[in-house]
Image (cartoon, rainbow, N blue to C red; front, side, top):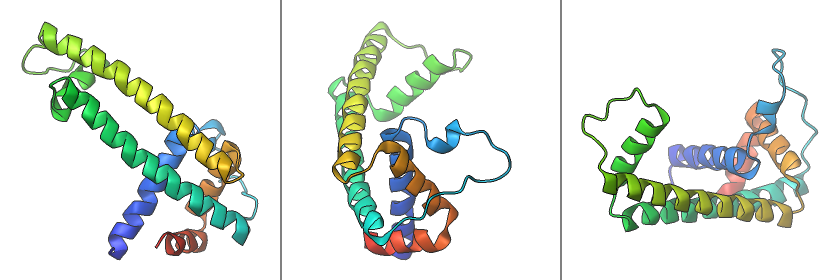
Length: 162
């Protein structure tokens, strides 16, 4: 694995962890006073457990992405078409260029319901994985914040992920 792909993997893992494990990250819940909040030090033992949880979370994310793709394709849609319809649903002023047929609308609604179920299930699995390593979501997200703020800590995590 190249250095660039390792950095990308770490960034993806952290993004997944922030947005799927805790819903909204702790950072988004705190007012911005121009300063990052102080994060409690992370022990070596805690960092080991964090990396273990992060790896499980990443595996769950990969499985979730596959399940979502499978759900879309099972309804006879491409991911691109689903995205186009979804974006048009979110932004009614968006011009699709062509109309959404009744069959596509029905397939879209079916896929959307399935994706919501898949996402909820994945979120619970990720929360369970984090808890298995002895973390609550808040502490897990605090460690993510610490990694984002501390280059040396980020480097340690990256090395542990190798």
